[in-house]
Image 1 (spheres, rainbow, N blue to C red):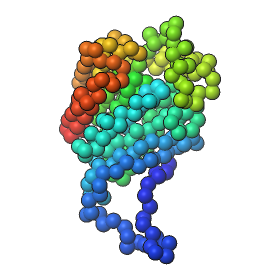
Image 2 (image 1 turned 30 degrees about the horizontal axis):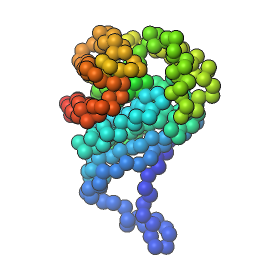
Image 3 (image 1 turned 45 degrees about the vertical axis):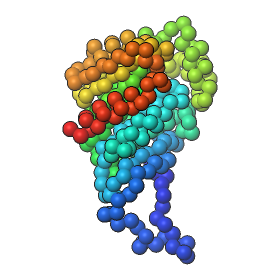
Image 4 (image 1 turned 180 degrees about the vertical axis):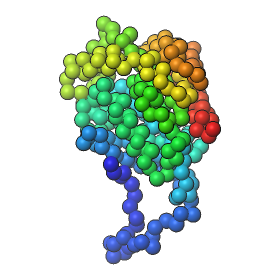
Length: 274
């Protein structure tokens, strides 16, 4: 794994100058950098956000998982957390937005595990105070990650995709339409993989093994995933858990982003500070 970041400033001769290293007591400004790790030999890209603070300070951190295809990056929530002293890494799944390979639903959780461990390995991340946030297919993946990673202190799933009930007569066409920005191989292969994934990985089953606090948010006017999905997941989950149903709320909450940003940031800050 390697991180793309600024190098030590060079001396006028072009050689690195050890004296130019930043002393530990110096406060660094907040920054966002491209960051890369490898999953099964494939390059996975994302944005790594570090809050303002001393060079040797460790921060709580949140892994961000985008939906399908991932047009909404939830940068507003990342920026708000940054202001509150919470680091984050927004990874792009294989086949999406610059990451190598093909996009496959059945591989999302494994990739999220790798992304979580990459974020936890950063020198400024406090590994015992980490959470995951996911929207739509990212929410589905976040719940499965919660099952796999006992070190997580909190899981947030907004408008989560569900299990076998996601397979309908229009599913094939919907996947084909949404997958235009992604590398998928073929639409038939993508559809077959989706059917396999939601049948074998039902979030209402995975949530049974989540022991950390869970926040589910779903708009009652969601035009992509019905809010009954989150209700079913909530019913299966153990305490502590919360379900917030939003009247007139759409799938990505585009009309209520400021509200969503405040809600999620407040909740994560509380859970990561306890």
